[in-house]
Amino acid sequence: MTDQADQAERPFPPGEYPVLVVGSGPGGLQLSYGLRKYGIPHAVISADPGAGGMFRRWPLFQRLLSWTKPYAPADKETREYQRYDWNSLIADEPGLRALQSEHLDGSSYFPSRPEMQANLEAFADRAQIAVRYGVRWERTRREAGPDGDRFVVETTDGEYRCRYLVLAVGVAQPLSPPTPGIELAKHYAETREASTYAGRRVFIIGKQNSGFELASGLATWASSIAVCSPTPAKTSVQTKSLVGVRARYVQPFEDSFLGLGVRVLDASITGLSSVEDGIRVDIRRTDNGEGVSLVADDVIAATGFTCPLLDLPDLGVSTFGASKLPAVTPFWESSTVPGIYFAGTIGQAAPGLRKHGIPANSGAVQGARYNALILAQHIAERRFGVVVERPVVDHAELIPYLLREATYAPELWHQKAYLARVVTASSDGGLRDQGILPLAHALDGRDDDMVAMTIEADGNGGLYPVAYVRRGGMVTEHMLPPDPLLQFATADHRAALAGALEAFPGMAGVALG
Figure (cartoon, rainbow, N blue to C red):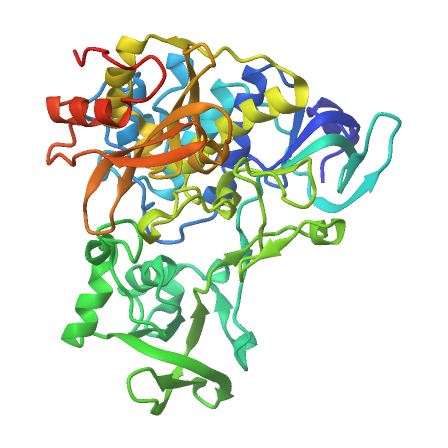
């Protein structure tokens, strides 16, 4: 706890602010940067001692699953480079771009946890993102005021009042299943230093990435490891996407097949109990229903996390699913309590279209950073009346512009079938670039003629552009040809997009170039 002198020097003392952001991970930092860009006064508070959010603690043993290529087919200061850098935050200033590449030791293009933390701390420092650290959010209530309601956020430092509240606190509250005896297990978040498992029998509940991360990280130390859940695990290689266990974690699979001290089990856990020589784990095999018992020295529940929303449900914030994600609009605003927004990994609560069953990347930095910038602009425009310029697009440039976006735009590549470049036509036929928007929002419009360009993956390794065209209130979907080199500005693509836009205002007879 800091003394009074320290408190006085820290930014954002308790009081009233138009916008209050809670959290200093990637989502909170990126949102604060965006709000400042649009001139929106706001405060940022965080329970952490410094920038970084979950990356101050996790992952435990392995490097991140997201990469940064120091040497890529694009200059680091360009927008196109973001496609190869999944870990840096986004900024207009050249000195704030591609910061993760400065914090890699050269041994891998997957940052270690400390390297990721250093990247985020550097962004917060160089961008001068002010945060009041060491402040824990405890309770929330609403108060009526003469010019509208206020959210009152009670913290360990005092009360904050705001018109608009943004929670960027991550999906970071440990979640354990209601298995009998689960109190005998430790959650992933409570995993000890690796060497303390030397010579011990370890049973891991859960076969998502975190379970296999533990199996990989503890394989050197544990005498035996079992990784167990009812459903067979699929790798990202099998799914040809980021859905499934990442290919980096194949070693536990291989060790299991070869009988080298790791077992990957398809079974449900029916109970845990204390026995003389450890913890007895009762399981029921998925293939034949047979009951089996094992004894372990340590049981670790790699069973995921839930949203730490505290008392927000009491204020009316609806949630869904085991992770208690909030029900939100396409712009990440609570569907049931207007004025409460969510940034960072909680952005996965807005599912988008989930084309071919593939989710958005909103739970990871490479997707959440774009969501945060879009949210900052949305708040600035809708809540504060900020006028953001919509550039005019020449009819002759529309097709090449959209195809360049399909080929190079990092927002579209990182948020496939979720974010789109949107261009609208006015009643007089003029074209305006509406920027990058959530595709679900763009398709919900009713009146304006529109074309939305996005990238989609078909779940079988296919990647291709898709143009959604609304004309006279009717939306049509146009899949453009795939390309083995992912170059989408060929003559075939120009012809296909011209056909899709044939009836679009002002496009009749426009040369393809």
